[in-house]
Image (cartoon, rainbow, N blue to C red; front, side, top):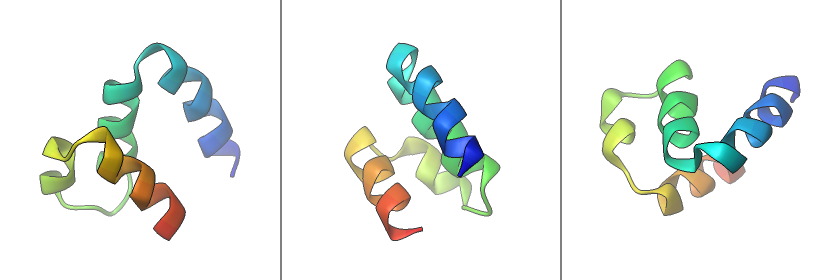
Length: 47
């Protein structure tokens, strides 16, 4: 949960970058790196 809070601040500045880095850092395939921000939000809710 701590990670999400830190990312939240970065997301404010770099929403697309943060979204890409977040899933990439997690055990998610590189395919998620090309998904839109809409999907990134879904990932956060699913996990």
